[in-house]
Image (cartoon, rainbow, N blue to C red):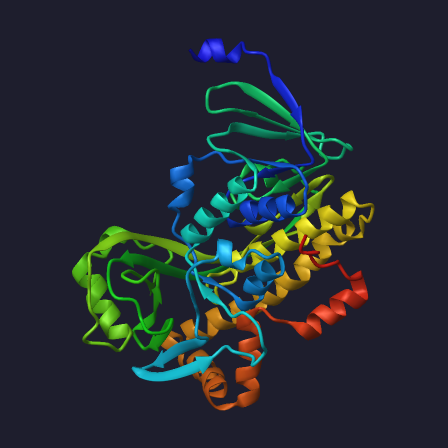
Length: 417
Protein backbone atom coordinates (compact mmCIF):
# COMPACT_ATOMS: atom_id res chain seq x y z
CA UNK A 1 0.00 0.00 0.00
CA UNK A 2 2.83 2.39 0.96
CA UNK A 3 4.65 1.52 -2.28
CA UNK A 4 1.53 2.26 -4.31
CA UNK A 5 1.04 5.61 -2.53
CA UNK A 6 4.65 6.59 -3.20
CA UNK A 7 4.06 6.10 -6.93
CA UNK A 8 1.06 8.43 -7.03
CA UNK A 9 1.51 11.59 -9.06
CA UNK A 10 1.81 14.76 -7.01
CA UNK A 11 -1.35 16.87 -6.97
CA UNK A 12 -0.67 20.62 -7.33
CA UNK A 13 -2.90 23.53 -6.35
CA UNK A 14 -2.64 27.22 -5.45
CA UNK A 15 -3.82 29.56 -2.70
CA UNK A 16 -2.86 32.89 -1.14
CA UNK A 17 -1.67 31.68 2.29
CA UNK A 18 -0.70 28.25 3.58
CA UNK A 19 -1.00 28.04 7.36
CA UNK A 20 1.10 25.34 9.03
CA UNK A 21 -0.48 24.23 12.31
CA UNK A 22 -4.04 24.24 13.68
CA UNK A 23 -3.47 25.48 17.21
CA UNK A 24 -4.68 28.87 18.49
CA UNK A 25 -2.17 30.79 16.34
CA UNK A 26 -2.87 28.98 13.07
CA UNK A 27 -6.63 28.86 13.46
CA UNK A 28 -6.76 32.54 14.41
CA UNK A 29 -4.69 33.48 11.36
CA UNK A 30 -6.94 31.38 9.13
CA UNK A 31 -10.19 32.65 10.63
CA UNK A 32 -9.14 36.30 10.31
CA UNK A 33 -7.99 35.76 6.73
CA UNK A 34 -11.37 34.21 5.87
CA UNK A 35 -13.07 37.24 7.44
CA UNK A 36 -10.96 39.37 5.10
CA UNK A 37 -11.96 37.36 2.03
CA UNK A 38 -8.47 35.86 1.57
CA UNK A 39 -8.06 32.22 0.54
CA UNK A 40 -5.92 30.00 2.71
CA UNK A 41 -5.27 26.33 3.47
CA UNK A 42 -4.49 25.05 6.97
CA UNK A 43 -2.30 21.95 7.31
CA UNK A 44 -2.19 20.07 10.63
CA UNK A 45 -0.20 16.88 11.18
CA UNK A 46 -2.39 15.64 14.04
CA UNK A 47 -5.98 14.39 13.97
CA UNK A 48 -8.88 16.72 14.71
CA UNK A 49 -9.66 14.90 17.97
CA UNK A 50 -6.07 15.23 19.17
CA UNK A 51 -5.91 18.95 18.42
CA UNK A 52 -9.27 19.63 20.08
CA UNK A 53 -8.21 18.02 23.36
CA UNK A 54 -4.78 19.60 23.91
CA UNK A 55 -4.79 21.13 27.41
CA UNK A 56 -3.10 24.51 27.69
CA UNK A 57 -3.56 28.04 29.07
CA UNK A 58 -6.97 29.15 30.25
CA UNK A 59 -7.21 32.98 30.20
CA UNK A 60 -7.59 35.09 27.06
CA UNK A 61 -6.35 38.51 28.15
CA UNK A 62 -8.39 41.69 27.75
CA UNK A 63 -6.38 42.90 24.75
CA UNK A 64 -7.00 39.64 22.89
CA UNK A 65 -10.71 39.66 23.74
CA UNK A 66 -10.98 43.16 22.29
CA UNK A 67 -9.04 42.03 19.23
CA UNK A 68 -11.58 39.26 18.55
CA UNK A 69 -14.38 41.74 19.26
CA UNK A 70 -12.98 44.15 16.65
CA UNK A 71 -13.31 41.34 14.08
CA UNK A 72 -16.86 40.55 15.21
CA UNK A 73 -15.75 37.16 16.52
CA UNK A 74 -15.61 37.29 20.32
CA UNK A 75 -19.03 35.72 20.91
CA UNK A 76 -18.37 32.94 18.39
CA UNK A 77 -14.86 31.87 19.35
CA UNK A 78 -14.33 32.61 23.03
CA UNK A 79 -17.20 31.19 25.03
CA UNK A 80 -16.17 30.75 28.63
CA UNK A 81 -17.06 33.28 31.29
CA UNK A 82 -15.77 36.81 31.86
CA UNK A 83 -12.77 36.90 34.17
CA UNK A 84 -13.48 39.26 37.07
CA UNK A 85 -9.95 40.63 37.02
CA UNK A 86 -9.01 39.44 40.51
CA UNK A 87 -5.76 37.52 40.95
CA UNK A 88 -5.07 36.22 44.45
CA UNK A 89 -1.54 36.20 45.78
CA UNK A 90 -1.10 34.17 48.95
CA UNK A 91 2.12 34.74 50.93
CA UNK A 92 2.71 32.38 53.84
CA UNK A 93 -1.01 31.67 53.91
CA UNK A 94 -2.06 35.34 53.92
CA UNK A 95 -4.29 36.46 51.03
CA UNK A 96 -3.54 39.55 48.92
CA UNK A 97 -6.13 40.08 46.15
CA UNK A 98 -4.83 42.19 43.25
CA UNK A 99 -7.01 43.54 40.46
CA UNK A 100 -5.76 43.54 36.89
CA UNK A 101 -8.52 45.90 35.75
CA UNK A 102 -7.18 49.13 34.29
CA UNK A 103 -10.58 50.83 34.59
CA UNK A 104 -11.13 51.14 30.85
CA UNK A 105 -14.46 50.45 29.19
CA UNK A 106 -15.00 47.46 26.93
CA UNK A 107 -14.85 43.66 26.96
CA UNK A 108 -12.66 42.06 29.59
CA UNK A 109 -10.57 38.90 29.81
CA UNK A 110 -12.28 35.51 29.50
CA UNK A 111 -11.63 32.22 31.23
CA UNK A 112 -11.27 30.11 28.09
CA UNK A 113 -9.06 26.98 28.09
CA UNK A 114 -7.06 26.43 24.92
CA UNK A 115 -9.04 23.37 23.87
CA UNK A 116 -12.30 25.39 24.02
CA UNK A 117 -10.78 28.20 21.95
CA UNK A 118 -9.41 25.71 19.40
CA UNK A 119 -12.74 23.89 19.11
CA UNK A 120 -14.64 27.14 18.56
CA UNK A 121 -12.08 28.52 16.09
CA UNK A 122 -12.20 25.25 14.17
CA UNK A 123 -16.00 25.32 13.97
CA UNK A 124 -16.03 29.02 12.96
CA UNK A 125 -13.39 28.58 10.27
CA UNK A 126 -15.15 25.57 8.75
CA UNK A 127 -18.58 27.20 8.95
CA UNK A 128 -17.14 30.15 7.01
CA UNK A 129 -15.98 27.80 4.25
CA UNK A 130 -12.39 27.34 5.40
CA UNK A 131 -10.07 24.60 4.13
CA UNK A 132 -8.59 22.66 7.06
CA UNK A 133 -6.63 19.44 6.42
CA UNK A 134 -5.79 17.19 9.36
CA UNK A 135 -3.23 14.36 9.36
CA UNK A 136 -1.04 16.14 6.84
CA UNK A 137 2.24 14.21 6.93
CA UNK A 138 5.79 15.04 5.79
CA UNK A 139 5.14 18.78 5.44
CA UNK A 140 8.06 20.59 3.81
CA UNK A 141 8.60 24.18 2.70
CA UNK A 142 10.36 25.16 -0.53
CA UNK A 143 11.47 28.30 -2.41
CA UNK A 144 10.66 30.56 0.53
CA UNK A 145 12.59 33.50 -0.94
CA UNK A 146 10.78 33.28 -4.30
CA UNK A 147 7.59 35.15 -5.14
CA UNK A 148 5.59 31.89 -4.96
CA UNK A 149 6.77 29.43 -2.30
CA UNK A 150 5.64 25.79 -2.36
CA UNK A 151 4.46 23.64 0.53
CA UNK A 152 4.53 19.87 0.02
CA UNK A 153 2.85 17.21 2.17
CA UNK A 154 1.08 13.85 2.08
CA UNK A 155 -2.64 13.77 2.71
CA UNK A 156 -4.25 11.33 5.13
CA UNK A 157 -4.65 8.77 2.31
CA UNK A 158 -0.97 9.05 1.36
CA UNK A 159 -1.42 11.20 -1.74
CA UNK A 160 1.54 13.55 -2.36
CA UNK A 161 0.37 17.15 -2.70
CA UNK A 162 1.94 20.54 -3.41
CA UNK A 163 0.46 23.98 -2.78
CA UNK A 164 1.94 27.13 -4.25
CA UNK A 165 1.12 30.33 -2.40
CA UNK A 166 2.03 33.95 -1.80
CA UNK A 167 2.79 33.56 1.91
CA UNK A 168 3.40 30.81 4.47
CA UNK A 169 2.33 31.27 8.10
CA UNK A 170 4.46 29.04 10.35
CA UNK A 171 2.16 28.37 13.31
CA UNK A 172 3.36 24.87 14.25
CA UNK A 173 5.13 25.61 17.51
CA UNK A 174 8.64 25.27 18.85
CA UNK A 175 9.19 21.77 17.42
CA UNK A 176 7.42 22.23 14.08
CA UNK A 177 8.84 22.16 10.57
CA UNK A 178 8.38 25.87 9.82
CA UNK A 179 11.32 27.29 11.72
CA UNK A 180 13.58 24.36 10.79
CA UNK A 181 12.97 25.28 7.15
CA UNK A 182 14.92 28.50 7.72
CA UNK A 183 18.62 28.09 6.80
CA UNK A 184 21.17 28.23 9.58
CA UNK A 185 22.39 31.72 10.36
CA UNK A 186 19.26 33.53 9.19
CA UNK A 187 17.68 33.75 12.67
CA UNK A 188 19.23 34.65 16.02
CA UNK A 189 17.97 32.64 19.00
CA UNK A 190 17.90 34.25 22.44
CA UNK A 191 17.33 31.57 25.10
CA UNK A 192 17.03 31.48 28.89
CA UNK A 193 16.68 28.43 31.13
CA UNK A 194 15.15 29.65 34.40
CA UNK A 195 16.54 26.66 36.34
CA UNK A 196 13.04 25.97 37.67
CA UNK A 197 10.74 23.01 37.16
CA UNK A 198 6.97 22.77 37.61
CA UNK A 199 4.92 19.72 38.30
CA UNK A 200 1.65 20.47 36.51
CA UNK A 201 -1.40 18.54 37.68
CA UNK A 202 -4.87 18.41 36.10
CA UNK A 203 -7.58 17.13 38.44
CA UNK A 204 -11.34 16.81 38.67
CA UNK A 205 -11.47 19.08 41.69
CA UNK A 206 -13.28 22.35 42.49
CA UNK A 207 -11.70 25.40 40.84
CA UNK A 208 -10.65 28.41 42.95
CA UNK A 209 -12.77 31.53 43.23
CA UNK A 210 -9.87 33.44 41.61
CA UNK A 211 -6.61 32.34 39.98
CA UNK A 212 -4.24 31.76 42.89
CA UNK A 213 -0.45 32.18 43.14
CA UNK A 214 1.05 31.10 46.46
CA UNK A 215 4.46 31.68 48.02
CA UNK A 216 5.86 29.99 51.10
CA UNK A 217 9.20 28.73 52.46
CA UNK A 218 8.25 25.32 51.03
CA UNK A 219 8.21 26.71 47.47
CA UNK A 220 5.82 28.09 44.86
CA UNK A 221 2.37 26.68 44.07
CA UNK A 222 -0.59 27.81 41.97
CA UNK A 223 -4.24 26.86 41.46
CA UNK A 224 -6.17 27.81 38.31
CA UNK A 225 -9.66 27.00 37.03
CA UNK A 226 -9.94 24.73 33.99
CA UNK A 227 -13.73 24.51 33.86
CA UNK A 228 -16.63 24.40 36.30
CA UNK A 229 -15.47 21.12 37.85
CA UNK A 230 -11.74 20.87 37.13
CA UNK A 231 -8.53 22.58 38.19
CA UNK A 232 -4.94 22.94 37.07
CA UNK A 233 -2.27 23.01 39.80
CA UNK A 234 1.41 23.88 39.62
CA UNK A 235 4.11 22.92 42.10
CA UNK A 236 7.70 24.15 41.98
CA UNK A 237 10.11 21.22 41.75
CA UNK A 238 13.59 20.40 40.39
CA UNK A 239 13.66 20.77 36.58
CA UNK A 240 14.63 17.10 36.13
CA UNK A 241 12.13 15.72 38.66
CA UNK A 242 10.20 12.52 37.89
CA UNK A 243 6.37 12.79 37.83
CA UNK A 244 6.32 9.24 39.19
CA UNK A 245 7.86 10.56 42.39
CA UNK A 246 4.62 12.45 43.02
CA UNK A 247 1.90 9.99 44.06
CA UNK A 248 -1.53 11.47 44.72
CA UNK A 249 -1.08 11.71 48.49
CA UNK A 250 2.15 13.66 48.11
CA UNK A 251 0.58 16.00 45.54
CA UNK A 252 -2.38 16.89 47.74
CA UNK A 253 -0.35 17.16 50.94
CA UNK A 254 2.14 19.51 49.25
CA UNK A 255 -0.63 21.61 47.68
CA UNK A 256 -2.40 22.03 51.03
CA UNK A 257 0.87 23.14 52.65
CA UNK A 258 2.06 25.53 49.94
CA UNK A 259 -1.39 26.99 49.20
CA UNK A 260 -1.99 27.50 52.89
CA UNK A 261 -5.29 25.66 52.64
CA UNK A 262 -5.50 22.57 54.91
CA UNK A 263 -9.10 22.00 53.76
CA UNK A 264 -8.30 21.97 50.02
CA UNK A 265 -10.70 19.52 48.36
CA UNK A 266 -8.95 16.81 46.36
CA UNK A 267 -10.19 14.89 43.33
CA UNK A 268 -9.06 12.33 40.76
CA UNK A 269 -5.83 13.38 39.04
CA UNK A 270 -6.23 12.97 35.28
CA UNK A 271 -2.82 14.20 34.11
CA UNK A 272 0.57 15.16 35.54
CA UNK A 273 3.92 16.08 34.05
CA UNK A 274 7.10 17.98 34.86
CA UNK A 275 8.46 20.69 32.58
CA UNK A 276 11.27 23.25 32.72
CA UNK A 277 10.52 26.95 32.71
CA UNK A 278 12.33 28.46 29.77
CA UNK A 279 12.15 31.47 27.50
CA UNK A 280 13.16 31.71 23.85
CA UNK A 281 12.97 34.39 21.15
CA UNK A 282 13.90 34.08 17.48
CA UNK A 283 14.76 37.26 15.61
CA UNK A 284 13.60 38.06 12.98
CA UNK A 285 10.21 36.33 12.83
CA UNK A 286 10.36 36.16 9.04
CA UNK A 287 12.40 34.54 6.31
CA UNK A 288 11.43 35.43 2.75
CA UNK A 289 7.73 34.64 2.38
CA UNK A 290 7.62 32.62 5.61
CA UNK A 291 6.26 34.41 8.68
CA UNK A 292 6.61 32.77 12.10
CA UNK A 293 3.60 33.12 14.40
CA UNK A 294 3.32 32.23 18.09
CA UNK A 295 5.44 29.48 19.62
CA UNK A 296 7.27 28.91 16.34
CA UNK A 297 8.96 32.25 17.04
CA UNK A 298 8.96 32.60 20.83
CA UNK A 299 8.42 30.67 24.05
CA UNK A 300 7.51 32.51 27.25
CA UNK A 301 7.69 31.24 30.82
CA UNK A 302 4.06 30.42 31.71
CA UNK A 303 4.03 32.92 34.57
CA UNK A 304 1.65 35.70 33.56
CA UNK A 305 -0.21 33.67 30.94
CA UNK A 306 1.43 35.38 27.95
CA UNK A 307 2.24 32.46 25.63
CA UNK A 308 -1.13 31.96 23.94
CA UNK A 309 -1.93 35.67 24.12
CA UNK A 310 1.29 36.58 22.30
CA UNK A 311 0.35 34.05 19.62
CA UNK A 312 -3.03 35.75 19.20
CA UNK A 313 -1.29 39.13 18.91
CA UNK A 314 1.04 37.80 16.18
CA UNK A 315 -1.92 36.26 14.34
CA UNK A 316 -3.86 39.52 14.31
CA UNK A 317 -0.88 41.51 13.04
CA UNK A 318 -0.09 38.96 10.34
CA UNK A 319 -3.68 38.66 9.09
CA UNK A 320 -4.12 42.43 8.85
CA UNK A 321 -0.73 42.78 7.14
CA UNK A 322 -1.64 40.17 4.51
CA UNK A 323 -5.03 41.78 3.94
CA UNK A 324 -3.35 45.15 3.38
CA UNK A 325 -0.70 43.61 1.12
CA UNK A 326 -3.37 42.02 -1.07
CA UNK A 327 -4.84 45.53 -1.40
CA UNK A 328 -1.47 46.95 -2.42
CA UNK A 329 0.14 48.08 0.86
CA UNK A 330 2.97 45.81 2.02
CA UNK A 331 4.19 48.02 4.88
CA UNK A 332 2.54 45.75 7.46
CA UNK A 333 4.44 42.72 6.19
CA UNK A 334 7.72 44.64 6.11
CA UNK A 335 7.29 45.71 9.75
CA UNK A 336 5.65 42.51 11.00
CA UNK A 337 8.69 41.12 12.81
CA UNK A 338 9.69 44.39 14.48
CA UNK A 339 6.11 45.07 15.64
CA UNK A 340 5.72 41.59 17.09
CA UNK A 341 9.12 41.57 18.78
CA UNK A 342 8.44 44.85 20.57
CA UNK A 343 5.54 43.18 22.40
CA UNK A 344 7.37 39.85 22.73
CA UNK A 345 10.22 41.43 24.67
CA UNK A 346 7.82 43.49 26.76
CA UNK A 347 5.92 40.35 27.78
CA UNK A 348 9.13 38.37 28.25
CA UNK A 349 10.33 40.98 30.72
CA UNK A 350 7.05 40.91 32.64
CA UNK A 351 6.99 37.12 32.73
CA UNK A 352 10.62 37.00 33.87
CA UNK A 353 9.94 39.57 36.61
CA UNK A 354 6.95 37.63 37.90
CA UNK A 355 8.76 34.28 37.66
CA UNK A 356 11.78 35.47 39.61
CA UNK A 357 9.70 37.37 42.16
CA UNK A 358 7.40 34.50 43.08
CA UNK A 359 10.06 31.80 43.13
CA UNK A 360 12.71 33.87 44.91
CA UNK A 361 10.14 34.95 47.51
CA UNK A 362 9.71 31.33 48.52
CA UNK A 363 12.87 29.34 49.12
CA UNK A 364 15.73 31.40 47.62
CA UNK A 365 18.75 32.50 49.64
CA UNK A 366 17.88 35.24 52.19
CA UNK A 367 19.00 38.33 50.25
CA UNK A 368 17.15 37.36 47.06
CA UNK A 369 14.11 36.28 49.09
CA UNK A 370 13.89 39.61 50.90
CA UNK A 371 14.25 41.54 47.64
CA UNK A 372 11.43 39.51 46.09
CA UNK A 373 9.18 40.01 49.09
CA UNK A 374 9.84 43.76 48.93
CA UNK A 375 8.61 43.71 45.31
CA UNK A 376 5.46 41.87 46.38
CA UNK A 377 4.89 44.31 49.23
CA UNK A 378 5.15 47.21 46.78
CA UNK A 379 2.62 45.51 44.50
CA UNK A 380 0.20 45.03 47.40
CA UNK A 381 0.55 48.57 48.83
CA UNK A 382 1.39 50.96 45.99
CA UNK A 383 -1.48 52.08 43.69
CA UNK A 384 1.07 53.03 41.02
CA UNK A 385 2.68 49.56 41.13
CA UNK A 386 -0.77 47.94 41.00
CA UNK A 387 -1.71 50.02 37.93
CA UNK A 388 1.48 49.03 36.12
CA UNK A 389 0.84 45.39 36.97
CA UNK A 390 -2.76 45.65 35.69
CA UNK A 391 -1.59 47.14 32.38
CA UNK A 392 0.84 44.30 31.84
CA UNK A 393 -1.65 41.58 32.83
CA UNK A 394 -4.42 42.88 30.55
CA UNK A 395 -2.05 43.32 27.61
CA UNK A 396 -3.40 46.84 27.08
CA UNK A 397 -0.52 49.14 26.19
CA UNK A 398 -1.86 52.46 24.80
CA UNK A 399 1.39 54.35 25.34
CA UNK A 400 3.46 51.62 23.70
CA UNK A 401 1.03 51.31 20.80
CA UNK A 402 1.21 55.06 20.21
CA UNK A 403 5.00 54.83 20.01
CA UNK A 404 4.73 51.81 17.71
CA UNK A 405 2.39 53.66 15.34
CA UNK A 406 4.78 56.62 15.28
CA UNK A 407 7.74 54.37 14.42
CA UNK A 408 6.10 51.81 12.12
CA UNK A 409 2.90 53.49 10.93
CA UNK A 410 -0.69 52.43 11.65
CA UNK A 411 -2.11 49.14 10.44
CA UNK A 412 -5.77 49.57 9.55
CA UNK A 413 -8.33 47.86 11.75
CA UNK A 414 -10.90 45.38 10.43
CA UNK A 415 -13.63 47.01 8.38
CA UNK A 416 -16.33 44.75 9.82
CA UNK A 417 -17.61 43.71 6.42
